Structure formats: C-alpha cells, structure tokens
Image (cartoon, rainbow, N blue to C red; front, top):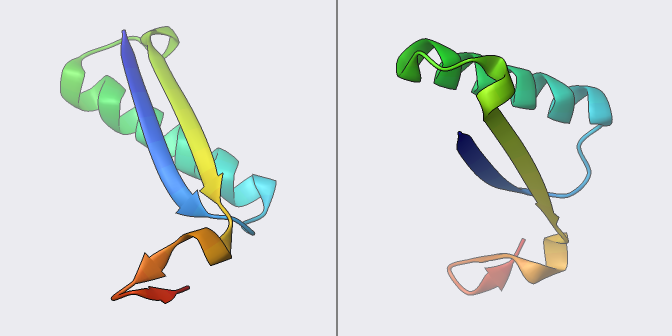
Length: 58
C-alpha cells in the first residue's frame, strides 16, 4: 500500500483537488504496478499566512 501526502496552499476548488488525487493515483498505479485500491492520497491545505518563501509569508 502507498500513502502519498501532498501539502498545498489552501483555496483550490474541490474539483481541482479531486483531479490531482486521481492523477497521483494513476501515476502510482502505472509506475509501481499497484492496484488503485492500494493507493491513498492525503491533501493537507496550508493557510497562506502559515507558509513563507525567503522568510516572507505567501
């Protein structure tokens, strides 16, 4: 079983997050020769004020 954790900034629509989870699953199935039922995808959404680049909050 594979568990994939993705951290992205909050604010993307559910449709976009669903498409991302589907494509990540497809990639693992193809590369690892796994069954889709063996792949878990977890998305953690980060509040924009809790993420910084070069010390500056995004």
